[in-house]
Length: 248
Image (cartoon, rainbow, N blue to C red):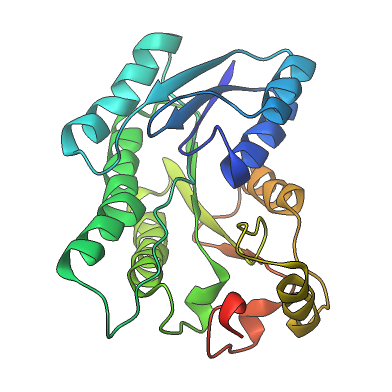
């Protein structure tokens, strides 16, 4: 049995990645910050794949809960995980002129510090064959702007961590990343905004969650690949945007 841990794996992009991994035969440890209740589409994918799953609740801003997450998962499944996907994220709306120490620390805790601690625990648990870690970044790391300032800084830190750990954990663990573009818009995005964003992409299209999940699934089994980031973003990372898409 292959076992994948997906933080934030019950909903949105994390759920799409989890569903794709289920199709690849992975049992799933699905993390949530409050209630580990998977989306209906994910439950259907799990049922179709016939794989085992369990839900785990942990506040990723709480050091004790972060430290206990992977050992608890290993105990529950009776084995150590083969794959760790750091998908959970905090997303705020501050800018450089409005940010606060609390906002910066809050985003860094969930978006970088917690993944770093989970990566440490994953590497310590690993046995043969080698394991894999996939960090979920954001296309904006290529050309960062001032919108969602704390979020962006924390994702850039996670990107740097991907590079560092790819070197430090080889050959026992491969560490890669996917960097999605605008994939699952919030209700703030009206039809006009989405059309404008789509037209602004070099490829003239926005990515679908399944395409991001496909990239993650490929990295999970790409035994000769480490330290790589795959941008799944309609080409957004090759173009500099002055503001977030909703403010364009």
